[in-house]
Image (cartoon, rainbow, N blue to C red; front, side, top):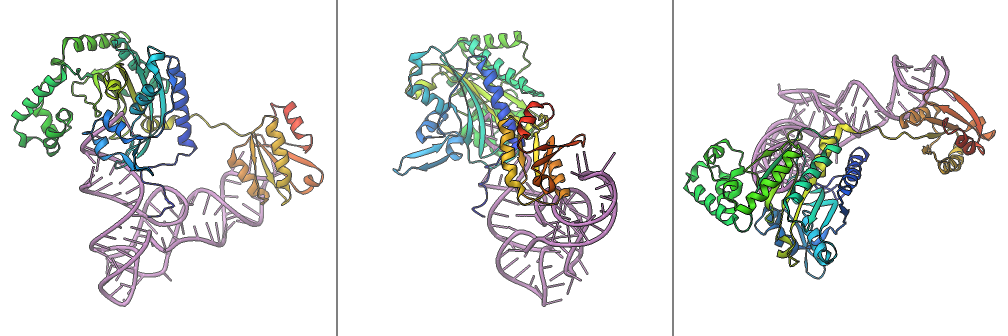
Length: 421
RNA sequence: GCGGAUGUAGCUCAGUUGGCAGAGCACCUGGUUGUGGCCCAGGGGGUCGAGAGUUCAAUCCUCUUCAUUCGCCCCA
C-alpha cells in the first residue's frame, strides 16, 4: 500500500462526474428554494456524542461505521456520518426556534462511513439534505415528499418508486414492538436465517425487512405497524396519504419499510431505484418529532430526508449535456511563440473568449492534432514567417477556412466579429 | 466484519501442460493529403500488483499480502 494512493472508498471526481454534482446542487437550490428552503453549511467534524445521542447507540452506523478519533485535547470527534444531527445542533445552538416558527433548511456535502465500498456506496459519499423544523402538521410531511419527487423529476430521473410507511409515535410504538417480539419469539427461531436470528436481539423490526424467502413466508402474517398505531398516528398518516394521492404521486405502501436511524417516527419514506445495483435506495427520510428536545433543544417537531448524490449520479450518468466548447486554441511553431501566445490569449480572454495555448512548439501536424482534440472552434497558429510578420493565422476548425490578422489587433478584431471568433 | 471475481503497455484486454512479453486504441517520427480528422510505413514505451516458496527456468503452479470490483450486512 502506497501513501500516494487515495484512501479506500474516497474518490476523485473529474469533470464528467463533478458536473453531475454541480448540476444536482444547482437544481436543488432552485427547486428547494422555490419551497422556501435556505442553504445551511455545517461543519464536517462534531463531537461524537452528538451522533451517538441522535442516531442511536445501538445502530450499526454508530457502533461500527463512524470515523471517530480524539483531538489534541483528548475530546472524541467524529466525521459526520449524516447531516441531520449537525443541522439539529446548529438549529438549537443558534436559537432558530425563537426567530422563526418554521425553519426550512437545505444542506449538501460529504459524509463519512467506514463501510466496505461497492457500487453506489463510498466511505466518503455525498448527501443532499432537507429539513423542515417547526411543523407537526401532516401537510408538512406531504409537502416535503412532493418536493423530493419534484426534485428527482427535475433531474430527469425516471424508474424510481416511492415507498411509504408510518412507524407510530412514542405512545404507540412500544406496544407494537412488544407484539412483534411476541410473534417472533413464537416462531421456530431455527427456521429464520442466521442474520434474522441475530436481528431478533438487536433490531426486531429488521426481520420484517429480510430478503430471504424463508423468512418472508415465516413473517408473512407478522403484526404490521399500521394496525397497531394510535388514533392520532393513523389520522396523521391517512392525511399524508390523501394529499399524496390527490397530488397524483405514484407510491406504494410498504408496511415493512424500516429506518436505520433511531430518531424516526410516524411518516417514513424511501425512494428506490432498481437500475443502479444492490444499493438502490436513492433517498430516504421521515419525521423525527422529539429529536430536538432529546438533544436539549426546544420541543420542536421536524421532518426531513437525505439523498445519496453518488446514487443519483449513477442514474444521471448517461444524461450529460455537451461540455462547452472553447473558442480558441493557440498552437506554436516556434520555441519563442508561446511567450507571445500568452499575451494574445489574455487579450482574447479579456475580450470575452475562452481558450488555451499549447506551451510546446511541436510539429505542425502534431499541433493540429492537439487542436482538433481540444475541440476549439478556432486554431491560432503562431510562429515562423507569421511571427516575424507580427501576425497570426486564424483557422476555422470546422470549415478549414483561414485568415491572417495582426497580433496587436487580434482581440479588437475578434470582439468586433464575435460571431466569427 | 463475511463471500465471489479481477490485477499483464497510458486505456481496453489477449496469452503460455511453466521456456526471450502480445493485439487494438492512444502517443511520437516520417510519407500521403487541401496545414488536423482518412490512409501507409516506422518508433518509444511493461520490475506481467507486491513478497515468499517449488523449479534448471515462474507472468503462468503454491502460500501470503495489497489493491480494485460485485454481492452480504447496513444505509442514502
